Image (cartoon, rainbow, N blue to C red; front, side, top):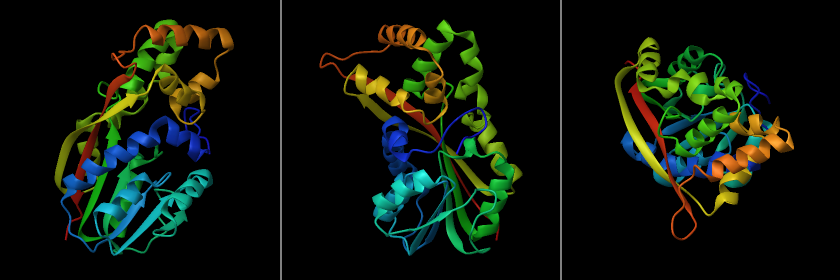
Length: 266
């Protein structure tokens, strides 16, 4: 599928190389911070390639887990990854294929920024959650702490001012914790808690950093796909001069995210 702004979300393997590997790291502190009981029925909205669903299975001793995802390509990767341990359904966040009041926990892992109507999605989460159930989400902090993307866009904009309009920090206001909180408040959720999370994103070398941007999945790779060879070479050279390199040749960066959790009213 192609999302607003020209972002493409079709190839789960390319997504895994770009950001999926870091999503899996983020899932662990996100779930640990929820502090929910074992034996619950979970729904993972926008489950993508299955990173958060897999973490729920491994860390939360769920009674059941359902993952919902609009991209057939992503669902294929998730199915292979999960091996039948979760029910995977094709569907959208604003029309969840789940009965009302059927889930104890409804989670959105790094997906709310890409949902066309956030309030419709949260209204569906409220519908599907049981009274007192948990509704929670994560979003990357695109404005400052998502370093590998922040460095990329800063370099791209230095070379091409038009790239500024494509930067996730500009396009996605929910990367600000105040906007995230307001969205949950508007949905009528209670007991809202917002937490900052950071995970290490260590790249083996410059090729390991740049290659995922060539996969065409997501805003930055979609931008790169539109560059001609000369523009790509200029961007590559510019990035080389702006990335920190450790003595062992690795590129040690950090990815920051916001996590929010709340409850459906009784």
